[in-house]
Image 1: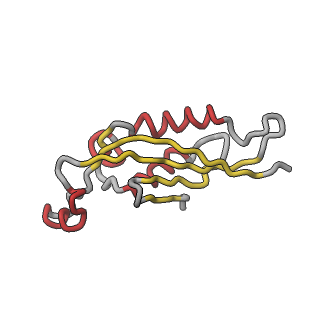
Image 2: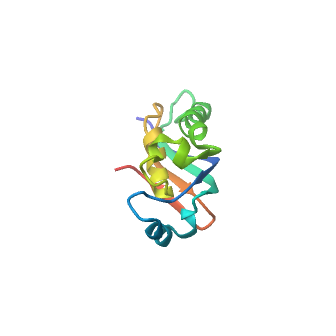
Length: 137
């Protein structure tokens, strides 16, 4: 029987978003989202932390090869979100407000199929004061 270990890995990407929903009036959007409802959007330098778990492979001493994990995250998340407008460039946010809570959920859904380890949770830091974590349902 193997030993289960949890691995944490950190990534960075920059993206812009506008917090706004067509379900509310401009006045309601401004009241709820404040300056984040700016029609031109605003950007963040996000820090993404993911945790995966698995048994230590006796041959390699690892639960997952970091190169495999990095290329998977690069393809599924970084290439999709980095230097993009979440509202305009990411299909998932055309109808969903791109809050960091929703960004966490979307990233989790994109990464949960990593074949070599089990995704435990994602954490997205939006600012030095705000971070959000999601561990699936």
